Length: 513
Ligand code: NDP
Ligand code: BG6
Image 1 (cartoon, rainbow, N blue to C red):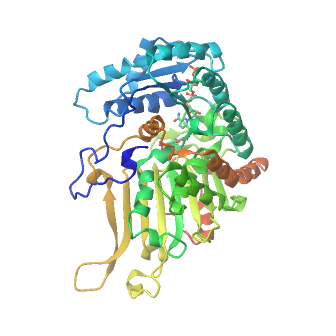
Image 2: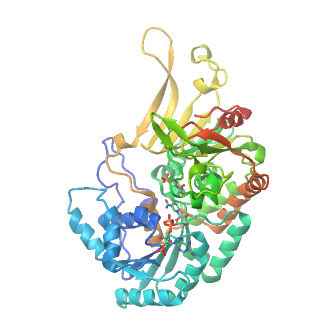
Image 3: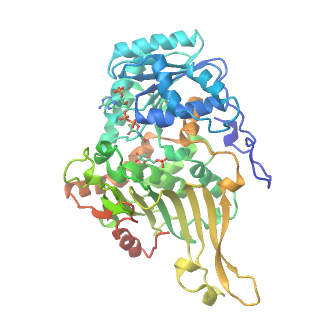
């Protein structure tokens, strides 16, 4: 694991702009690392994976001997791959410092192999080229499966045969979706395990690589003031909110087969929930943390259909501009009832959280883009200032907000006195705004996760029993919604979403933040 996971921190009151202590470049001694991006011609590879690899190289985080390969069916030369990659590379960290040279150096380490995904010859040819680059050093190989899920197993079958080595490691990063329900997810796991050991499978959930999500455990477990409050005794409800201000934009074909519950709730929001609600792990080791996450997930009640509201965005014209509805996307089947919005109330049946509603809300084509965790606390018993703060718990109680994106922040709403001779109370924020406190740009989630996979750090990847527990919560309700073809409530593109979400929250005396 990385040394900086353990402890080091800066105590300074100054705005931090350098590399934090303990953030030195991790290196792999002796061997080589080759990273093969399977599906290199695709959207995710271009948008996220190659730029993240370059950022790691630029920050001197990649091992000395590394090679990047792209693999896909499209015909491309090494040069063409480099041209394609170079379009999306940016010098995020420091635009002035020898950026062009670094890009060129990086691109010279990138190569391409074209082949079918089920073709042993294609992967044998890739293996031959990899060996050439490995120059007899200890070979470590990372395959990133940035491809549609129906071909995961083909690739693993072919790639794992050619990739065995007695000395180095071979790992596979797998992108979601990991199945569509408990059954298909179990089937995928069983198929992957025919060729790979669980330790070789790195199931990615990129929300776990986001800075604020990483900070959640630090906040809880390294500050005395939060953990004692972290239970049903003090917390009224927890809200996990994801919203995007754009629609499925070209991904309608993929999306229609999944819907927002599978796309966002079952993975990104549920992972945050598990980290939020878990008991203190024995240590920061991956297995200890994941053991605690599994326990929380297994203590959750399967979601009931009456605790879910679904919506779908419809076309809307605003300021002379028209925004298409989900159903207007030509790749979406006619009459689709796939939800692009969902709100849900979830419960954890354990001693810490009994009765506390965990409300999730996720939607596309809403009025704003944000991801937040909001913790609403109970009201102060026998509050002396009840008259001044009012009795409405939504305006009088404390609320802790972790804004995951955009504009990362952690703030706590408190009541305080308005300065002056009178006694008037006011709600204010104790505010940690990252852009003010830390001048350094925040790395993209994919950078952290790629680096972790290279280093064999599994803490932020999903173990198969976690995945099973996550699907057990959502599979029954998904089945019911789909069997009954429950019609989603339509909401205009760019709006706040279906009003049903407010009624659902009101059933549990909650108002959305
Ligand atoms: P793409 O649809 O762009 O597919 C990636 C590549 O796979 C394509 O360039 C194509 O390469 C090949 N491919 C596409 N369709 C098929 C097919 N039916 N059969 C065989 N090969 C095919 O996917 P993305 O890059 O968008 O995503 C990759 C993975 O990451 C998917 O599992 C996706 O769900 C997941 N993901 C994507 C996100 C995104 O923002 N794009 C976000 C989170 C997850 P070629 O034709 O050259 O072989
Ligand atoms: C992906 C979903 O997992 O996350 C997309 O498939 C969504 O639908 C994306 O847009 C959001 O990620 P981010 O990091 O941009 O918030």
